[in-house]
Image (cartoon, rainbow, N blue to C red; front, side, top):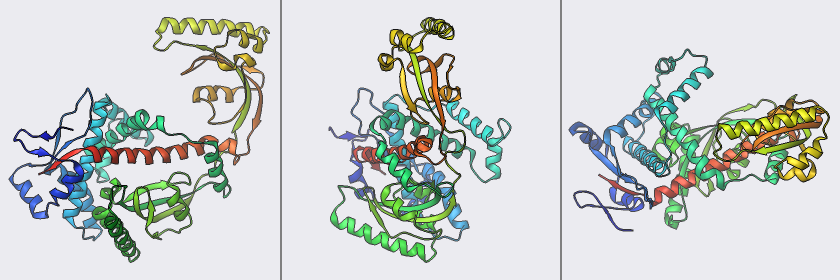
Length: 450
């Protein structure tokens, strides 16, 4: 790749080299930068080869200071004594990662509008029974900066869209994985949940053996310091390579199947307040703290059913307009009228259904939660045996559904819990693959520290 230069002719170097050359800005240097002017501290450009190139983006000292301030204040209030130089450098690295994510999204044509964020804010208000427009006031009362909260929502929306477009097509969950998770999480009235904090010392294939040994030794020391009562927020802020480090190291509540197996087998056997030994995973060395534990709500529950059904599908062309949509719907409504008069469903399905099941008279067999697309399931599970549905729209087209049998499922059965278990496994895999994708982008990026 050709070298990249700024307007003054200085060559921009790859991120992995710039880190070594740039060093850490001291606290005095940060203060000097802020006192003189809002100086540029980094220039970031994703290493993207594309017909749609992205522009370099600068990060200023005031941006770093603004992002660092809330956690530094929290650590101060907790009586911690964080190394502010290291913490600000961690914040800078996280801002670089955010810029790279935004540049990649821009190159892919993904964006998050102010209207998207407004809609998310409105949903939070509805969820918390707040009057419209009152969320910012509620945040201020809790000591939360509304603009920072909006930025967090924007980042989350963008992450969801990137995962949907880039990561989701590469990830799948097998029946064996679902069964294995079901076997280990049965009983007890509901799955145990743990709230975790962690410090991650990143290691990958390019890390030298001596550096790996250094990180392993540091991980042991950090685990010991946590056991003696040092603040997780303090240590994570200084040492963790995970984005959660600048937020105090807390990573949230988890059920089994939602974290990496190497961590899961250890943390679910621990009590609140306990600290793991360093655990090696493909990401590096993790030191995990169990902050809280609780028994989750019972799974499955009454009302979970499985059905044996047939269907007739009439497809709608991709990008079809309203006229074609109406024609297909009107045709299906006429078919429904004939079926209600006594026409044989299986015979009609063989003749006109555009699904692969047509040759079997539309027979789908037995299915429970999580096995069909949501609109189809919702309609099917509401029907009584031998009841015919109204037309149902799914991404595949318009359906008529005939339920032939219906059975109640045991609340803790695999069939009742399949959807929940699959979602847990999928979320864990998506997050792990997404984090690896971000690290790959970071390694290919060009960053100049100033």
